[in-house]
Amino acid sequence: MNLFMRIFFLFTCAIAVLSGTACGSAGDQINRPAATAQSSPAPATPDGRAIFRKYCVTCHGADGKLGLNGAKDLTVSTLALEERINVITYGRKVMTPFNEVLTPEEIKAVAEYTRQLN
Image (cartoon, rainbow, N blue to C red; front, top):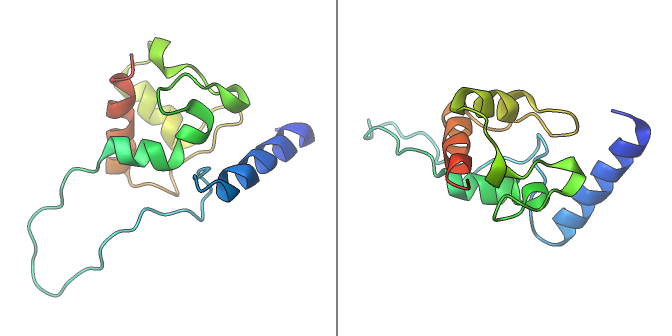
């Protein structure tokens, strides 16, 4: 990524932080409950919509159409589920990779949610 793109991305993230939204940096984590000594029921399926709203709306917008920082319009995406998972996991161009931010289950939940935006 060239210097201009990095500066633009950092500037956008700074604005997002100041406005109370997330930009998907590796330091951002979804709050997870602490492990308990007792066995608990199987964890619930992650909420793809909530995760999307926390990490993705800054560039994609709530409806998937914003296109900030070159973000693709998710309402016209033809990517299959596995391709979406790959893009979310490893990033693409200036998009942040989320493999160190989200669990594989959370990534899959976001990918499934984005399919609903079509």
